[in-house]
Length: 305
Ligand SMILES: CN[C@](CCCC[B-](O)(O)O)(CCN1CCCCC1)C(=O)O
Ligand SMILES: [Mn+2]
Ligand SMILES: [Mn+2]
Ligand SMILES: [Mn+2]
Image (cartoon, protein in one colour):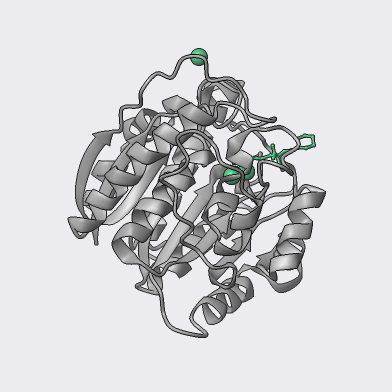
């Protein structure tokens, strides 16, 4: 596997400080060395630098639109470059608003994508449905063709081109979905494996069905967008919006092992690690180490040896 790593130390898609420390914490836990030790070629492209945006007043209830738009435009260019260099891209967040730039940059290089979104949340609020105005709860709405009539003009967002079809998306791990988001998911007929389905089917069946579903038509490169809060807070407490009843460590790893064996993984986001949300060093290291292990599972690390 040839891996290109991008750090995106960005936090303005949500209100809590600390998530911008995620990229360097994940590196400090030995991500590059561990990927090399399991046989990957790894190039670390460093961290994207983001511009300071003054007077970034809310528009409607959408918070920090100019900073989020600008950051994602820069991230999009960085991801595009990593893909053009022929690597599988690993984007280390930072908050989940960064999926806008990550998926946009990936689509610029690979055209038709399938998206596997692993998260406690659907992150599919539009600017008009969001209960908080935090853009980390909205990224998918800017990317999906079928939602574009619902997206108002926002400063620094005009560069975004919708690039994902509702039929090419699968959600895994949902357990905290806003009513309006649920309406959107139903309206668009988006495939969802909530924690109920994980419990009912078991993770092996969920992954079998996920792959059958995204490969049922033509096989597309996979964009795996992994929010660390998909895991149960007993494993990954150091995150901005923890929700009880999450994936076990083993379920989380099974997902990445299964996606890896498809041979179609083209880009990965690992987002929402926030050390300032950990109450102890153990909570922080448990969260960071889970993120590292999930990424290792994407690139051939097998529990059997
Ligand atoms: C579920 N939607 C939330 C959370 C988004 C989490 C983003 B992620 O990147 O971490 O997944 C929360 C909205 N609720 C907040 C508490 C009161 C009810 C609404 C939102 O702010 O849109
Ligand atoms: Mn701080
Ligand atoms: Mn998320
Ligand atoms: Mn989440």
